[in-house]
Length: 353
Picture 1 (cartoon, rainbow, N blue to C red):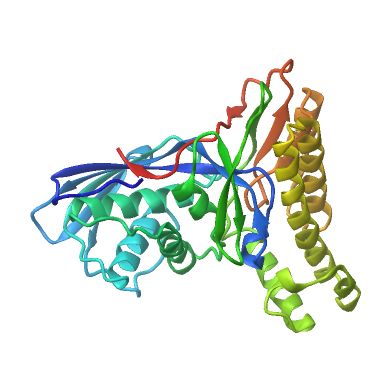
Picture 2: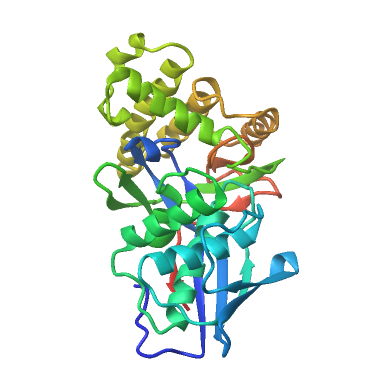
């Protein structure tokens, strides 16, 4: 639960986790399926009431601060950094009808930026919860609605046309579980992530990922163009037979989405029967598809995949939107992840502390 704010407190602390996506990449904005889970690392926002008419935010990890008027308008120029998230969250909450109050924010995170672990969604969710709570407002009971609001921050204020995967995973996380998300119906079903001594870990490729500057928006546009050519509203309605009607590279993009959706349910079935070796095979298959069909890998990512497989991983794939970031790997009980690996343990979702 988010928690209940009985009255406007002087100080609140909100935490939102990053996420790792077990499988189901670039499917969310195509009405497809994904299987993410919230992780222990995330972003914490401490909010303290102020007596003036603005919000002062301090990004402790960047040793930087700025003042934001509560009357911030949509015409404000993007800065390309954490300020866009603060400005955008204030604006979108106000546009949704929430009456915010002056506050002083301290922002600090444990999830690495640009690693494909969704530091952005964690920041959006933590900011939203903190700003609402310090104003004496209860967060919306509809977590999907709050995820949509956070996604608007990303699209309108940051410039990344992401889907809802990251925000839903951060807001709905359940300890010990992954989340099967159907992005057509927005049904979220917890799936027990019983690893039985196996371990999931992420290793940074050394190449920082930035969705706005990468090919992420281009891939989404390619999927939209494929829908136009096929006369479909969504790639969820496409079939394997439609691939012959598309030019390159659109046919490859669609093939990835169709096969990735099937891999999500195959991964759920593997988890339900405790077949971790099959899960590893699906991770490898997903990575090859992202590399060869979706064309969103890099040399640094490929080198990291090879290094993890040489270290004993039974499956490894890029996570996040690609074009850099981290590689997630599954290790059997008798194999230790490399020293630079980040443990990935399924954790609870965003909350007030």
